[in-house]
Length: 145
Image (cartoon, rainbow, N blue to C red; front, side):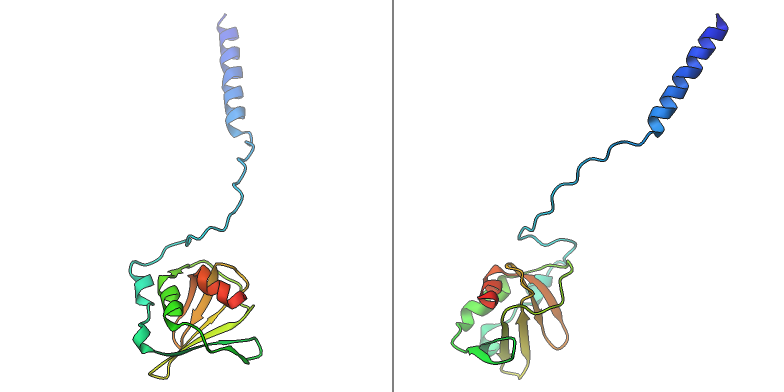
């Protein structure tokens, strides 16, 4: 009788070990979506630190990819407000230019260049020392129109 119980216990133990070690079917991954939310970690205050003041802006110009001026009659307030309302996105982006180029010139001869890489919600804004990947559907629409 002891041998039968020992065999049954050994069989049950083997079944438990084998079932614990057997590969499990992976859970399906959710489909990736592109929402208007930043991914990753954004430092507190970084969005506000990138803001510009309308009083410091001299002019706003829109250029085509060849560098020809497309429009100089842009509403500075609207552009600055859209830039200031944008949110920093620390995800990677494609390094290419698609659409127009928006240049904000400041009274101190500095410039902020805003480019599109074809995304309808995200843009890239660059100064001499800083580059921001931003979520700004308003500016992206201007650059892609």
